[in-house]
Length: 473
Image (tube, rainbow, N blue to C red; front, top):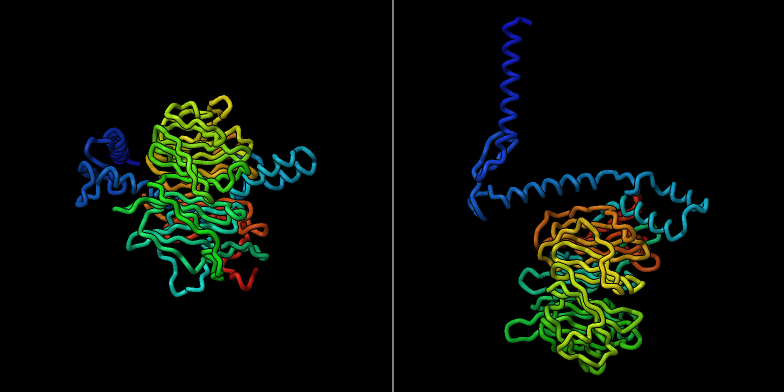
């Protein structure tokens, strides 16, 4: 190389180094955005400006969507079924079990961890006799019964209000999951705040529905027989009744024999416990809106989570319901509004999630948090958590529209699943997880409803799509 050319290339290298150093030092200019693709700065306008796409919020949303698309593409590719725990896989776990090195309970928990890490997404076609009218209304809520054979759904309707009904699930012999939607959907112009299954005449015989009041019409709680949504149109649908209760945030059904046929509703600064047969009520004053509720099974005790961050329990056998807090059998606090409470089978431990994205496991006996599950995202949304204790799993969908699964045992984040649709306030997925989706012959996996679509995340990598109920089950 000639000396002059050597000097020229050296100067070019030096100039490019200086330019890259200058860019790295000046990329964060107040009021400007640096686009690495176009290699130039663009001015940012404050706030939300419809004429200027370059706002901080818009750029952040663009980056988040790019990340979601990349993760979704990675999820759609062939997944290597391994455990988040280094060195564990299905074959190794089975070998350890056969050698007696792994207790059955530990084997079951770890094999579920391996399987959920490799779940793959499949879109479900919802069958209906009215096939000319496919579902185009967005899912707002889905709640499964105790056997995971039926899922109660609430969908937003484009002209306002919502519709609700029941989807029936069937696990098929050839390894597919089929879904059948009831034909007789019900419509209301009210907002549905909360839903739970109720065992009035037999297990999961009814659905409890909290409807928000509108205009001059007060809120109410409806107790609907599940047979009302049967495609066979029975002559006797069962007990149907409505209770005039001002707008309720939450509801729960009691399964304890001492207070069966009893349900609770969480309202603004009070809790109402109602006997579904006689209509008699007991009112308990609270210091804040009651956003989440669950009854214990071993005793008629109701746990409540409040907007203030308070978690307290009510023993229905106690008579005193005065303005003091003496009737609260236990009471502790988190830092923000409680969105969900879930008792573990032991009933000495309770999981609670709040609007700061904190999920904590509490020891009720000592009123102390013993575990915290990291990674959940929430700022202001009313989001539930889902506990599957036999499988050792905790699930939650964040405000960022990612579904996260943790090991209930040691808090390890096992999987983060991106939404199949772009994130948004009105497109947060609803999920149901079970090792028997569709009942005793059902399949293990995750059910996800987002927008007007329904997805199944299958354990089985050889899952067969598109099998019909009539021909394959």
